[in-house]
Image 1 (spheres, one colour):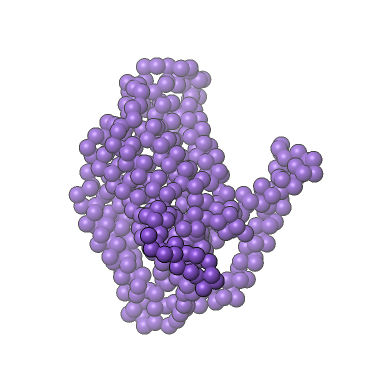
Image 2: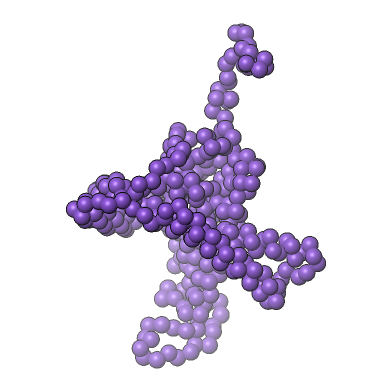
Length: 386
């Protein structure tokens, strides 16, 4: 056994680290923090997978995977507390979708009537729309599947919002997108900060023995929250102006026009390619169009970066752990897209006639790949957000 080395301070340091110590997730810090873009790519991969299925068991598994990773790797930062709000928003979306299905009906045929609402006659210009009438089990199940898919998409976005530091994500944006990125980041941090303000005010009222529910309490909490949001917006605007937000360097008109053409053409190509990938018959041309659009967009962004005269202090590194996190989300999306072409019935359980959904084996295993960030991403320190 090799002798132990001594550190400069005199403490003994093991000569060799075990395999577990070598691959153990480090504590997140300024140098070891995971790239914020990796969290967004992972979450968008899960969202893409959710868009390919209406199986409630697979959608519930996606929500569980996202929730487990958030519970394992989120910090105490204000934006990390917004995950619960996205869960409640998802439940609200499901309830709203069911309510619309009950009130407005559905063209879906059904043989299991549950109840019948009084049907209100509508004018001729609203032909095709029904208000009230018979409600069947088939249309409610279809509405629940549809609402659950949308709720899962929201939960995936909420997971990215809870895990990725928006300020570090802003640092990683291309120079051409800096100004738009600032606006997006300010908008993204608005909701989490409002949630944190509401929690703080409710806690203060509870400690003073005042009610925290009811219309009167909501009004008394809402006004200070809106006042704080307005003051924060004014402070952010002053800070952005002091730091030179909106100031750009002069570039030749030809470069500016070329940048606009490349960026616009690239975005149109990426939209068309993404639509082709999501459509049932467009998978053949979707990938090449998406690749060409991405190349044009990257060229436009690099050329547009000449207008920015800012420097980047301590840019975040895209390391192996970021590749693993982003790759796990991409793998989940790719495998679910492939499963949709191989066995579409497993991903879309029947509604007419009603059939109990089953849990397909290998799509389930593919979704579980999304748990990888919970084991490879750096562990956030408890005091990281303070």
